Length: 101
Image (cartoon, rainbow, N blue to C red; front, side, top):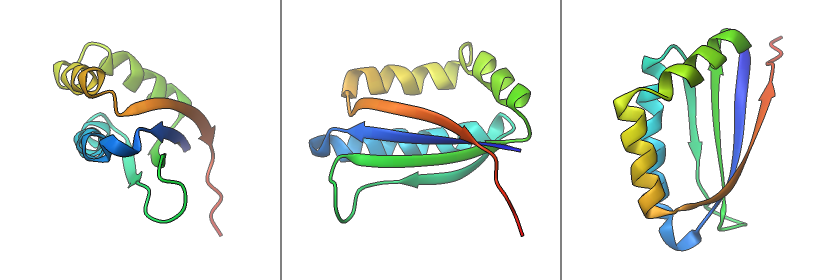
């Protein structure tokens, strides 16, 4: 299993738009074979940092997801909406493997 960890810098004045973006992606990732663990938006502390975590069975499965999202109409619509909203300033993507007891 591989978990994608995303750290977003978001526009704090556009958190509603970012939350709509986040809610749209969760079912897409799940539909495409991943397990979305949720988005985590600012509450206390920094007002412009958000996180997301989702897992795929393997890096190959994640890479297949990336190829499919590039041509998926729903994914493209979500990305187009964010391009208009501009709630995301930047993001970092890392991959981790979980360790269970």
